[in-house]
Length: 457
Image 1 (cartoon, rainbow, N blue to C red):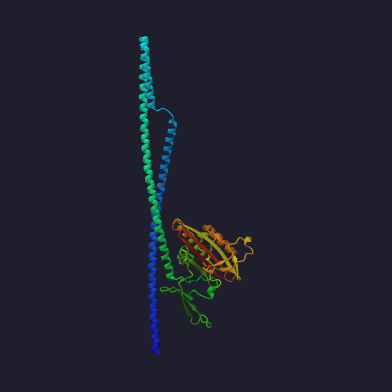
Image 2 (image 1 turned 180 degrees about the vertical axis):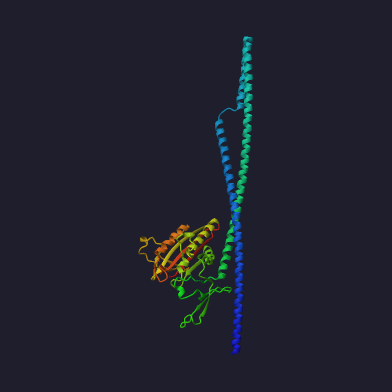
């Protein structure tokens, strides 16, 4: 029997050593995955900067192209008007030729007249010669003007040729930039896909199901029954823990206390802030935008602070440091949505909210009279396993102002009651569901994620 006990102890030690080894390997894999994720995020940031620069160059090139087209259009319009104005008119060369022919005919006429009547036509001859000399001067001036016009026309044609060449270069640059942008978009899409795979691998290594424990501060009067010394939060262990010292049932505090130890994925002491709580769940929200389904719910006895953890105080909106996990999660999803839209994604967020009170489902976002009398049933899709609620209001969310408006509307309609520890204690289960639908314009890739935020009664 002793040998069997010893062998069993050895087997337990071996199993414990193996478990410890596996835990160390798991931690190392998580660290390696985190490092890879950081490197991918840095690479994606660099690519975003490069795409931004290329987009700026593309915009500048399109501006130059537009200016060149406007200039070419103006020159073409001027040339068309000039051709229309000159249509059907004699050219300068035609005018000079007619003047020369007229002078030649006049000389012949005078010679014939002089032969018939004697030297009476000398004066006319000198007048004719004077006329021809004057006409020759006019012809010379017209030739100068023609040369000047031809020089201007040549200069304009050279400018048009330069503009055509610039336009061709600009169009070639635009084509090159568009090709480069398309190439970078393909690489960015592949990098984003790889990032999503690594990110969600890290989340799976940390555990698809995690249990956090939050201990709220003592309320007035509670320190007469319990004391902070009855709780310990050990540090340095492999997993966060909580140790409760329970006094003996009969002897009160004078008797020896019994210590009970509990392990969790994370333990939050009374001094933990709302922001620190949200930091623990924030990485999971990226998985929702990557197309995964996530459920975060708070449970515990009445007065343990579930609603404060989930909703908190939202009087000052985003500026309120006491706001809970629900508004912070919706803000984070909207920030990620804006970043995805800048990368070519079309993202749509829709929201619905219900409560379950006395086995009855109530729509907290309904418009009142229009939804009065509608029955809400839980329906299960046999093919996909999805659970939906019939006749439930679905509201699109586009801004942070809409977030707080919807949360305020749902909060005022929720069933509450006064307890010895809370003047407005929640008496119902509430479920806030956010659906994410995303589609990439270039790659046509689609994603569909869902976030359920549950506050149990």
